[in-house]
Length: 121
Image (cartoon, rainbow, N blue to C red; front, side, top):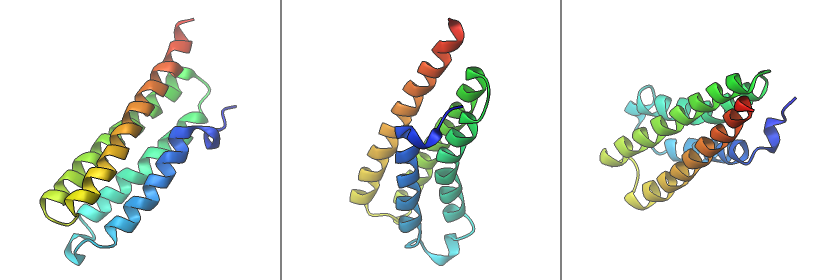
């Protein structure tokens, strides 16, 4: 059984969720059910899919959930860039958070490759 709580990508994704929720609190009220909802769901989806995938029996299944997690990270990056364009986030804050997300994307992708490499042995 895999312990998702020990994966650095899960730990960092959980930290990202808190950052995103704090950031979203400052969005305009008219975005609560649109962009805020999308951003928070994407952020929550990243560690959630890592955790769910860790429960799967096969490396292939785990890899699929890591792929979904990666997709959510790309989605989150896109949504934050939209928020920045709408001036809901200061450019400085956006750059810092997006850099963290890109780092997380790269690490999830590398982790997925390692997991899937075990299926070829």
